[in-house]
Image (tube, rainbow, N blue to C red; front, top):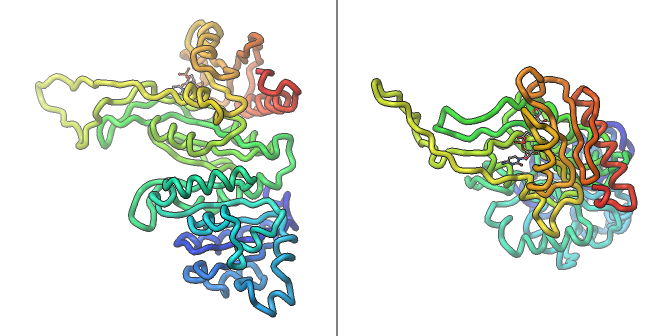
Length: 409
Ligand code: PMT
């Protein structure tokens, strides 16, 4: 995908957050991919990275001051705003988003953001409490309503010592969002979320309940969606596969983490639940390794149900993705059980696969799908998992471009 958008011009607005340092690597990698990168560094941003390093990595003058006579004569903030094919704000701080949402233009960054007609991609980064604050969430919702696209933030360890949502998306994820923006492809402009792989439900710090899913099928679907131009967030349980190129990948362990990451990835037009989510988790996982005591009976594991991610996504009301596809992994009565799942989970399509012993579907490279929709059952021939992914994406293209849209379900 890397060279598709070469020659495109990105205006990178670097605001004041600890994650600003990542934009130096981002600028370098975008240049390598053939983008022209111009940068605006806010006053607060210049406390974290220097204009000199940004200038060295972009090969361009860095713009900082709204009232700079030289800058205005040479370039002018209106020209900066006009000439960009895409404006990326990274890190998008709570303060900058607040000023943007209220239409302020009190520095070069906000003046350009107000004056531009170019698409704007925001990469938020801040402390979790600031991110979750109703004021930030209201500003975010307003900016999204006005057409800003969002990448991240991701969850994890934050510079402030807290753990939670608020980390700037990683550089490959920022690049994936930019490439998806410029990608041609029939699904351009659409957002997709895909779950893949197993989940691990801890028994104690060293043991867990899981299954044999390798992630091959889900990862192939995420890659095929990205190739068709969709902006894809892949939420992956623990697998031994590399992250697909051009896809924002979020790594999770448990079903609860997977559900939270799915909600974080919304809004989405398409959702594909290919993950083999553990149906049950331990009621109370042990905090220390459980000891084997000579002569004592083995411990009884007390289980409680995990939330159903597919059913939850299908029941989101206004936030529901337009097209939701689940899988059904069955060992008998494959189509009949899958039809029941279609109804029970409220999704639009189910891809049923036979995972009985000897089928080789779990962990293998091939799959045989029965596509279940409201219209009936369609049996696909045995194919590679990549071909299954490509066939499914072709179906998305047909369904979403047809007049009846979701009623193609
Ligand atoms: O990963 P691979 O090795 O490539 O193997 C592919 C696969 C066999 C895992 C894949 O093709 C597949 O069938 N995935 C779904 C496996 C599964 O858990 O099926 P299920 O019938 O138990 O669940 C039905 C649907 O509900 C699935 O879309 C599942 O993602 C979803 N689900 C299930 C439980 C739960 N708590 N939350 C869910 O979202």
